[in-house]
Length: 350
Image (tube, rainbow, N blue to C red; front, side):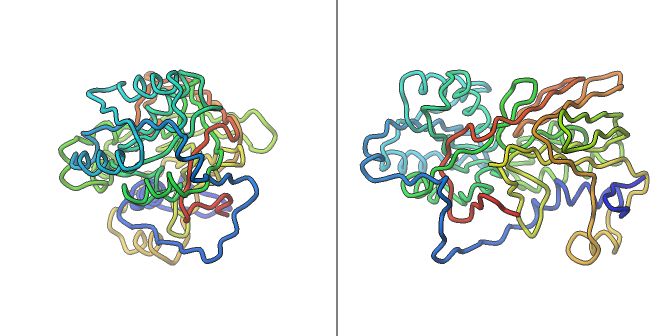
């Protein structure tokens, strides 16, 4: 059985690659907007407001290639940030919570998606979403969330902080743990665990592709049940390679991975098990980079529960942070997190 929508089938590897892997090998195009009219939901940041803001930046000095420290310290000083560096796992959440409780107006996270997740968890712990604006400074390996909200580099991040539009985006929760980008279970979560820091430092984001392809031949699909709590989407059950719950992220479409993160709905993608593996066949290439479309089982829902009959719990990656659960309850909090976005961000990417 292949992954399917409207009766179309694709190979196991093609669907896996299209959903989570091969997008790492393709840089999304830059979309330029001329005389772009912002929707009324957006909030501009005036020079006076920016001058009055109390700003804290939480930086993971070991993220990505670990060479971003001097640039971030310099730019942060120029833009009125107090920089606080992490030393280990969990520090980013602690530092963000402390900053929020001390009255910070803007808390920026400099690192990869995992560091951004920790900072959001810290703001959540302080119950400060109403008071704090969260900003992303991409300094990790993949930087998917930053790219999805239109932040393309460290320099661009500080420009967006000063002049970007402020929007209020959805927040996801999985067993009450917050996430901003995606929750992924199955093959790619296991592959993420197996991706070493050394490999990420050596080859960057391609390391995740390599680990996924290494893990794929030996990965056993897991029996899952996906139950929605509304009448919008039908439940699903079967043997799954991957279950992908997107908040700000979705499988690549037209060269982009940004989902609608203001509609209060998750984009749920399930890749069912398919025994036939074709890693390098011509059909795979045609379907990935043009020609036949690869269709997948998809649902849109504000809330869902994922359960398994497997003997062991399932690994899930929340923005790169790992949890393990036999039962996972996910819910969207619509327009919960204030953040500043770049020019390529689209409130409705569809």
